[in-house]
Amino acid sequence: MDAHLLIVDDDERIRTLLQKFLMRHGFLVTAARDAAHARRILAGLDFDLIVLDVMMPGEDGVSLTRSLRETLATPILLLTAKGETDNRIEGLEAGADDYLAKPFEPKELLLRINAILRRMPDTSVSDNAPKVLSMGPIRYDIERGELWQGDDLVRLTATEIQLMRIFAAQPGAALSRSKLVEELGRDRGQAQERAVDVQITRLRRKIEDNPKQPRYLQTVRGAGYMLAPD
Image: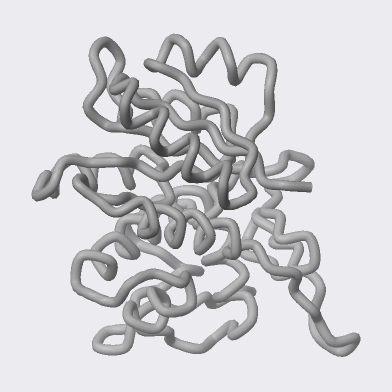
């Protein structure tokens, strides 16, 4: 089945342009003019990915992202003003999976969308490998890509799901920020490495008893990050 996208932008010209372009590339596309309109649509439909403009009248894209993350794990790609670094970091901290600075070529948006949708590949696990990793009260089901605390499923964003898959494939191994950026299918550069730092911080809040002194998702000085399950 074709992926279903939700485009949220207050500029009708941009909405129409992106909707037509993405539909030509095989996507099902629904458009919303603002956050309130998006909420009404989301109340009745499920989407594979949300493309969300940060600068909208009324509720902005970062606020909407933060609110949606309370109940939805749907990947979110933010559209930000060029050079607005604070908006990008704030958006990632709110739960966005990636961002794209305006102005951009529609083809670049298409590449970003496809990269995000590829971040949840099927994981083949050998019969001798552990199927579950334990981190104190937290369990990670490798085959399902799910994080559990007791009987409660811990909600993860698409990027967090992919990060857990990457770390679970190499427990005890230090992975550099540049390696994680590459595994996530993103462009290389310091901005993306800083974005990984933000995602790691968010993931630690869901794994660690004390995220400021991580026991399981550790920082290895000079090497990167390492998952150290029980």
